[in-house]
Length: 577
Ligand SMILES: *[C@@H]1O[C@H](CO)[C@@H](O)[C@H](O)[C@H]1NC(C)=O
Ligand SMILES: *[C@@H]1O[C@H](CO)[C@@H](O)[C@H](O)[C@H]1NC(C)=O
Ligand SMILES: *[C@@H]1O[C@H](CO)[C@@H](O)[C@H](O)[C@H]1NC(C)=O
Ligand SMILES: *[C@@H]1O[C@H](CO)[C@@H](O)[C@H](O)[C@H]1NC(C)=O
Ligand SMILES: *[C@@H]1O[C@H](CO)[C@@H](O)[C@H](O)[C@H]1NC(C)=O
Ligand SMILES: *[C@@H]1O[C@H](CO)[C@@H](O)[C@H](O)[C@H]1NC(C)=O
Ligand SMILES: *[C@@H]1O[C@H](CO)[C@@H](O)[C@H](O)[C@H]1NC(C)=O
Ligand SMILES: *[C@@H]1O[C@H](CO)[C@@H](O)[C@H](O)[C@H]1NC(C)=O
Ligand SMILES: *[C@@H]1O[C@H](CO)[C@@H](O)[C@H](O)[C@H]1NC(C)=O
Image 1 (cartoon, protein in one colour):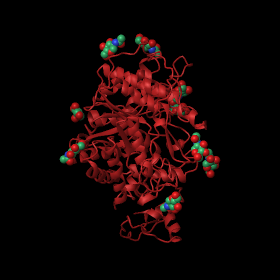
Image 2 (tube, helix red, strand yellow; image 1 turned 135 degrees about the horizontal axis):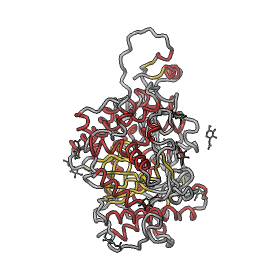
Image 3 (cartoon, helix red, strand yellow; image 1 turned 90 degrees about the vertical axis):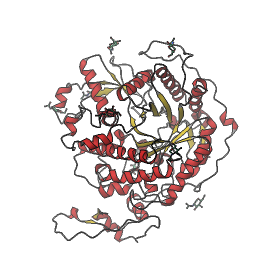
């Protein structure tokens, strides 16, 4: 394990505490070499999990509920639906002629609907029971202004201790599924090496609690919280060593839970987490890979790691449903010009297609990406293409919104020839405003999520596009969708927080869009609302709210919002018995 010279100096001043749960194996000392640069002095000193916390993260906060608690009873008053809210007919917008409710709309009997969360955003208890730090513990604690509110995930929603209550509440609402992610650095505090049995026992009970409440558990293996050790040892997703470490980690999870968990997601939204690279300087291992190339190097390793994990899962239990979790909005040409049509195709290719084309169609990148990535990525071998192609059972898409796409002002060709162009290498542009330059595509979410508008008129077209382009064998699922109720964080009165009309209307209209698509023959198999409750919205902290439940972060009490009832009511109304 090579660590920066700097940290060996720091460590010399602190006592070396070796954690009982896991230790870094020592490696042999490098043979003596001469060097002219002080930066090339590195050390392979042994560090415990506690040392990692002390050196890289510092003190963390804890909450008064710090052991697993039995569910608090759910007051029956909190399960009375809200007063009815007024809704216009769907769809309301410019794109689809007005239609009234169609009595023949149906969700199939086996359609699953539930809520989603992710480990670092909800669990808290970051140092409990041997968890090692992830890159997000460093990003929230150490990197100035990385999180606009300076919030951390130290306590978050205290789900690590209150999951029984959380699952009981989901069941009380009438939801069918709970999708959560595993914290890799709980299970393997250093990302590789020694296994933390306490973490496995914790997730055993999360899964068993779901089953006891008749809730289908869905497991995401990786939701952005990369073990810090892997980033600092070799650069995380920028190094191909991540592929074998991800295999080892996922084999542990599949082996442990394949009899109890049917639905698995390998990686969550690599378009986003690969674009976290380059990471902020001087907190993590340095890399010589040019900044613009880093997301694509990450993506390359993601495709190999994901597909490897898929085959491991299937080899242990071929009946599992294992999928890749992609993300992005629907892409509408701003005008009917040929260049805008071309820009839209480039936008699909550089977003969804970057991963979905290899996984669902060819084992390789879309042709518009190739001229760029071939400059620095090794081409996939025939064997690798065969390994990658066909490795997602569902087209699992986190599909919140839609935007207009168009050619750059200079045109696509001029951009492609110009490596310093601000839109290179994608060479497409986008906007949320109609070509008339006046109207937004739809009502805006919170200013903290400027990318998000309600654009549910396009849901049927979007679902058709997914099915017709990538043709998934187990159908399409919307694995995240949701709305940040504008300015919700400014409300201090509980009763006014709990009525969230923008979010409620979003869920109703979105699900009506899904019903239209199903009636037109699209195979949509499930939905997961983002999110189970308000949580750490990454670099926006707790200021942007996506929950269908409110959490009082002072007391960790949970409350259903009106949107929770709206969401469930759509299935009560439309699902076949
Ligand atoms: C757990 O919380 C209690 C207060 O509720 C506190 O006294 C105790 O020190 C905490 N234990 C740990 C390990 O943080
Ligand atoms: C976050 O912390 C930084 C550094 O201490 C400080 O400059 C900034 O004002 C803080 N931001 C908020 C929203 O508290
Ligand atoms: C495979 O997984 C299913 C659940 O998806 C389970 O019912 C079955 O027992 C598992 N089969 C084996 C061989 O473990
Ligand atoms: C594009 O063409 C279609 C069909 O002719 C038309 O309905 C639509 O309004 C046009 N869109 C724009 C933005 O001009
Ligand atoms: C990729 O897999 C799909 C089925 O999953 C198949 O239809 C297609 O022919 C494969 N493509 C290649 C290039 O092998
Ligand atoms: C991209 O679109 C925005 C919004 O229409 C526009 O202001 C900007 O100039 C465009 N940028 C380029 C490089 O074409
Ligand atoms: C390339 O793009 C940059 C940034 O937009 C611009 O300043 C420059 O003039 C362009 N070069 C050419 C040759 O078009
Ligand atoms: C959250 O709990 C604190 C402590 O009981 C209380 O003062 C505050 O009013 C609560 N917030 C809301 C919105 O209910
Ligand atoms: C209602 O839905 C059915 C099934 O998709 C469709 O055949 C019919 O045209 C729809 N009716 C209206 C008025 O939209």
